[in-house]
Amino acid sequence: MGIIFKQSFRNTLVIYLGFLVGAINAIIFYPNILQEEYHGLVTFLLSASNLFMPLIAFGVHNTIVKFYSSYKTKAERDRFLSSIILFPLVIALPIGFFWDIFHDFIISQLNKSNDSKVEDYTMAIYIIAVCCAYFEVFYSWAKVHLKTVLGNVLKEFYNRAAVFVLLLAVFFQLISKSEFIFALTIFYVVRTLIMMFYAFKTYFPKFVFLLPVNTKEIIKYSAYIFLAGSAGAIIIDIDKLMIPGKEAIKAASYYAVAVYIGSFIEAPGRALGQILQPLTSKSLNDNNEEEVDNLYKKSSINLILISGLFFLLVNCSISDLFKIMPEGYAGGELVVLMISLGKMYTMSLGNNRDIINNSKFYRMILPIGFGMAASVYYLNKLFYFSMDFGTEGLALSTLISLFVFNTIKLWFVKAKFKMNPYTKKTAIISLVIMVFFATFYFWHLSIPEFFLGKIPVHIILNILIKSLVITVFYLIVVVKLKISPQFNALISRFRSKIFG
Image 1 (cartoon, rainbow, N blue to C red):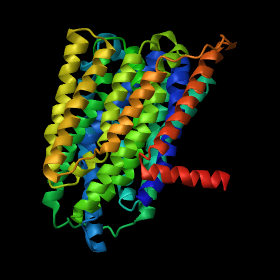
Image 2 (image 1 turned 180 degrees about the vertical axis):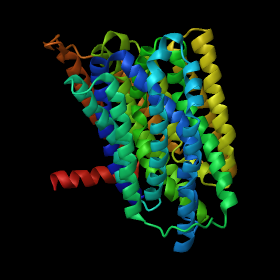
Image 3 (image 1 turned 30 degrees about the vertical axis):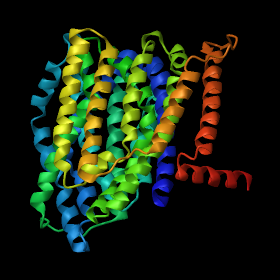
Image 4 (image 1 turned 90 degrees about the vertical axis):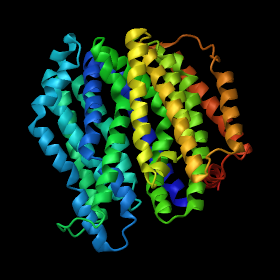
């Protein structure tokens, strides 16, 4: 796990730096600079582009990871990469040509009060979707050579930093709110170009116009991944797309912030997954079941340990956090709790998804993906539209779907591979997280009210002090209990560098 921990640690730092900048954007800048209506519009446009992205990518980014290590000669790899890079273009060009049809469909799904707000910006959906598709292709190109850090910076930090800069430009009236959207689109184009040049620098193939010998298998796998990826995109973004069909578009802004906060805990999984994905694929291609099982268990316990800390930090301070935000954003505590619980369960599965995706049982991801997508969609219809539960109903739909279908994936890997990510230490760390949550959720410091201008300093101090106390005691407990040898080794290395 040496290379995994080294790059995952760097990736985790980058991701959390990105999340920190994103938190500033979501909690302070978006509400106060772009404000609810335009923030809701940006949320809608990005969510819509996320739905188009899997169609354009056609699963190519996952196909590269699965098949690249199976080719043994440079000539075979070059044929493979030369062909696979053209797949998204074959799909993107016809979609662009018939974009008017997609434009009309998008507008038809909106509440009448929102269609005029979206009308002028649908082309941004297409451009961003194409850029994101090719970004993922070139990122996978670098991943298979275990070069993940720059791609991670571009994926997790770059966009949020771009938004940060652009929001400041709006604040200082250097650009208008509508120009913000067009400028953000340009930033996505630049990001893709940077990733492309880095991928080619990492490995530049000799381009040949010959299809790989296993083209039929590649297309079949890509089609399955495309369908499953489309279902996955629906799960992530359907909530934000359905809100403007019922309420004012600014409601999407409120919900997006709560979901963003609740999703904060999944960053370790994203960091670990970027290096685990190619390693899992290689172990499966080499029929090294012992290594796959080893990766499965270690990824699970380490993700529970790390994401558990951030679950506590987020949920034990969430009521204070909403107090420092504009009034419309308040009241999302239950949404944050349900989203973060669902993410925690997903993290506990470790590299379960990579095992299924890169094995001969990859077809299973299709019924699971569509089952989850259908579940989220129809539960949203029930809880949000019929029973009028509000955005809590959307979060409940997500939680139920994640619990049910993650359990199916857990059972499937157990049945087919005879592997289980959980050990006795899983029960111990789960108990630790529950005890800490019960202890600190209702604990509030009695700090006298103190304002710096309009900034409630006493609330910020309460969040900082509580977070520091939780972090220190949590780390002491998990180190003493020896939950993770890798984590303890990392702490020991950190101590030796600080104290000599």
